[in-house]
Amino acid sequence: MKNILFLLFGLLLSAHLHAQFGINSAYRFNNTPDLKIIKSFDGTNDEFEVLSNGFSIGVDYWFRLKNYRIEFLPELNYGQYNRNLQTDDETIELKSGAASFFLNTNIYFLDLAGDCNCPTFSKQGPTINKGIFLQLSPGLTYWNQSYTSQSGDNVTSNINFSVAAGLGVDIGITDLITITPFGGLRYYPKIEWTDLSVITDEYFLLELKDEKSSLMQAYAGIRIGIRLDKENY
Image (tube, rainbow, N blue to C red):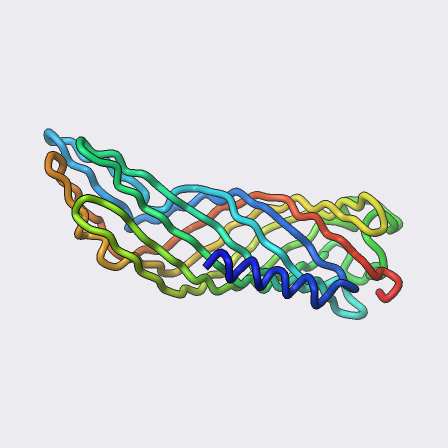
């Protein structure tokens, strides 16, 4: 799946060498209230998130409304969230890959009718007013999940909808390069990992709390925007 995603990234970049595109990386904190493994031993219970925290990378293509500072950045993104669960006699490997399409929409609410034709570096007025934006981002994610244990192996996949909201600020380095720190929350109403309940261990009681759960994902990252034909904007 990663090879397919990188191929799509390459096609996106090669098709728009005369436009503005961006590359970003973010760290994502995953919280699934129900998709957890419960390990019981000697009367004590420990809960483990099936999804670990981890990094994601993304690439996007930029376009905007003509007269207002509402900008669109459709993005291809990939994250890997692996966890090793250590029992008395083995290490259970849980691997989750997330290939996503996000439709990012940036709304510059403090400068909505401002100059759209140049990056923050060249605009007039306070930097915070020019650069800060609210980002709304619906998305679709293809999850590829697998585990390896002595009791058996399993590979499964599913597609889930999500929605995100966050804030960012553009910091113009030159007329061609913009750095954008950003952060927010992404919510998945439902993700699932089928057949995970077959994991067992000789000394511990391993129990899956549920195969389905909502997912709240907090994230923070940085984007590098590159404009190759600013004279057309």
